Amino acid sequence: MTRTLKTLLAGTALLALAACEPATAPDPAPAVPAATPVSPGTAAMYAAQPDGDLIVPAIPPSLLTEDKARQIVPYWTDHPVGTIIVDPYAKRLYHVQAGDTAMRYSVGVGAAGYGFAGEAHTPYQRDWPRWTPTDTMLAQNPAHYGPSADGVEGGLENPMGARALYIHNSGGDTFYRIHGTPDPQSIGTASSAGCIRLFNQDIIHLAENTRSMAKVVVLSQAQTGMGTTPPGAAAAPAAPAATYDTTDITGGTP
Image (tube, rainbow, N blue to C red; front, side):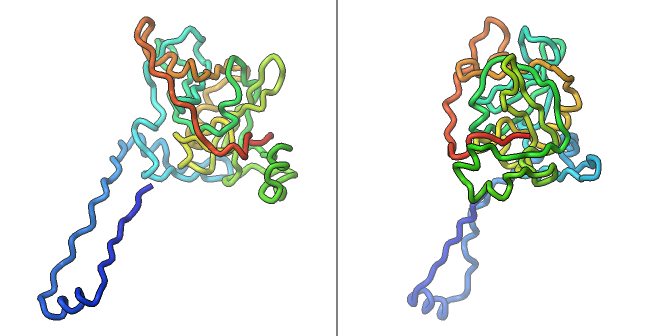
């Protein structure tokens, strides 16, 4: 987000001088560096797209960079092709492909996104899922979440976005979700609510390419960066702990 600096010069002495001297143009405001435009291919990936009866809005160009766009990258892991590896501390998600590569997505991480680490699987997913605030959310902020206590139908403003992958382990539902978001500016950031959120265009792409019961691995802070360097190379430095408002500790339930 950019800020515009405005300078206001006022005072009777300056007004008097202005009446006696030829008018001069004010110094121009400092130029704000423009965002580097993305390639036409990247822009097309994040353009508005139809999805059933809805139109997924385009991601504003100001929120896009080539680094943030989904892309195939080198990735070294023993986990099988099709595994989803979430690195919350690097704000990345990797969908393992053949040949030491992965499709990399940028993610936003809510407080609940740091609440689980380990191996699990995704038995099912939902298109435009329904969302219901948890009992904790209702207890902590009844004025805000009370009107949604009975649930919110799926749609463009639903906090779960266009798709949600539900994560289970041997103990059942972990209440960990990989989902879209109506708030694209949250991608690449740590925020108070939700789990692992992607641009709606990206969660649609990931869901289309994820089979039921796919393996899911969520890295701990000590494991962050795992897979991004070849075996035997120095590991990436550990990411600092995230800071966020912890009043909303989960993204709700389906």
